[in-house]
Length: 256
Image (tube, rainbow, N blue to C red; front, top):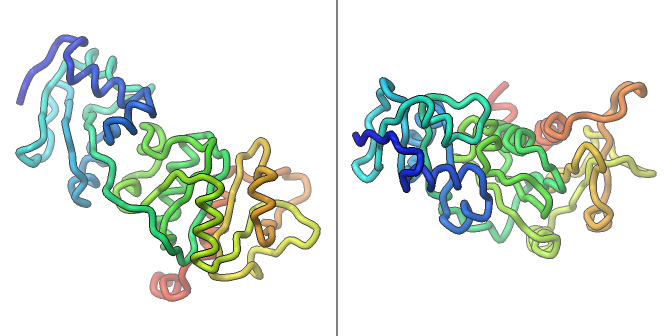
């Protein structure tokens, strides 16, 4: 294993840029992860790990021979990590080689969900409840940003998350013969128990909800009943309710 002490080392500069620039991540086809738990998930699910940094004294698990590994002092590791509470391992991973499916059997659409923690949590929940993946419209946080990746708890290695335009979403819905049901109040909103299945469901940001363009594409809306004194749910919580209701029936029985 290499030992690096210079903060201007080319590998460290590369990893630092992966943590701060979405454009750089997309250009390099690589994203940044932190912590031993995510490393275990990446190794277990066959992710293509590019490079790894660990704090001095940390012993990582066995790595493929193609991985460039280096130890660094703690202060240097903290200078690379974009997170407020970095763990003792940072590593870079190639984007999963997952083409956008032509036809879907359901799934979740995010519209303007800007909090990366919410995006990562929704990805984790979609994986838990058997959704085929996430579609992210413009304005959403990058699902491969460090905070979203950490919140996904490894789901980023198992489930697809694709950024699409409104036009692409419309084409997917037509090819899949699926209705789009938006989480919003409408004159004749479905209750969660009565919304169509299968369907694609859409959740917007907490601040403004679904955009007018997405609502125009929706075949209906769904409301989540709650006390009148409560204005709304966190976007990740609302998504969890809809994903639970949309889960595959056989999967639900299987899990009790």
